[in-house]
Image (cartoon, rainbow, N blue to C red; front, side):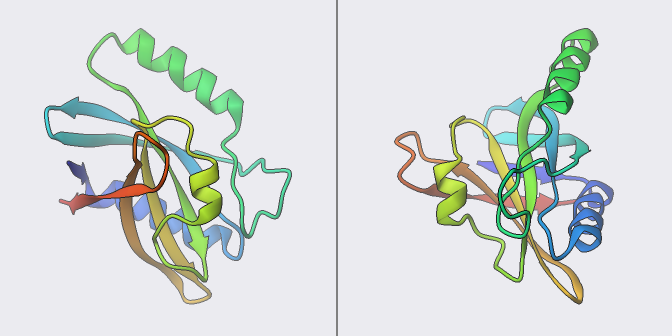
Length: 143
C-alpha cells in the first residue's frame, strides 16, 4: 500500500507538530483510495481534546469528525475520511503501545510525525493489522 501526500500538506502536519510541542498535535485526513494507492488531499487540524496527558495521548475533537463527515458527503465524489495524524514529541514516528490500544478502525491511515524541541522530524505512515495485534508500515510518498 502506498500513501501519497503533497509536500505542502506534509508541511502542514510538521508545522502543527512543531507548534504543539511538547504536546501531541492531531487532526483528520481526507482523500481518495485507488486500488493500492491512498492519496491524501486534505489535512484537517483538530484541538487535542484528550482527558489524559497531552504529551503522550491525543484525541481528535468529535465535532471536527462529524463536520467533516457532512462535508465529505456533500462533496459527492470519491473523497472520504481516510485517517488521522498526530505527533510523537521526543519519540520516533512509529506507533506506540498507546496507539495500538486506540486502533479501532482497521482501514484508517495513521500518519505519525516525530517532533523535538528543534522542530518536526520524520513522518511515518501506518495502518492497523486486521487483528489489531500491530501496525503495518506503509510506503509514504511526499510529492
